[in-house]
Length: 205
Image 1 (spheres, rainbow, N blue to C red):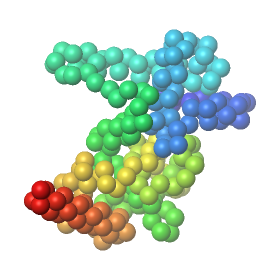
Image 2: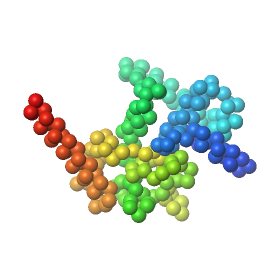
Image 3: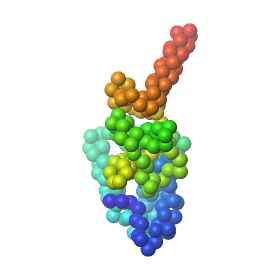
């Protein structure tokens, strides 16, 4: 269910409330901000109502988080998280999310529209997104087909992460000839140069 409520009679107020949670890097982190605020306010339904938040959606998300935590404990998996105050907190979360969504990525073309990776479908950022800019690469949760094709719940990601996290999927021999492929080629070449330089310095020492 959608986390944000937008009643017809209070759309402006709902949009203003949503903007208070917005994160510059996109919707996934905006949703995380909502969850943090929900927990800080002791899961208060009144707080949810005042901020146009769907309390059932937040309760469901909290239940899933607790379930995942129990599964990790059962299998003796280490529970770890970057400190919330760390500069790397949101960065690490974006990388972690990309590890699960690396096949759901779109690239911004010079024409101003996005193409989904590999299948080259023209898509647009859904109007509900929280971004105030058009990142070169975005990962997305949903592909919505209407009169236009939209991608919804989007977050800014970096091209370097794609080749680090999903090297087999981003193998260039499997790519159609497109702008994204040429960008990835430059990233692979840059990484190779860095590796060669690192090895050269290592051999000298």
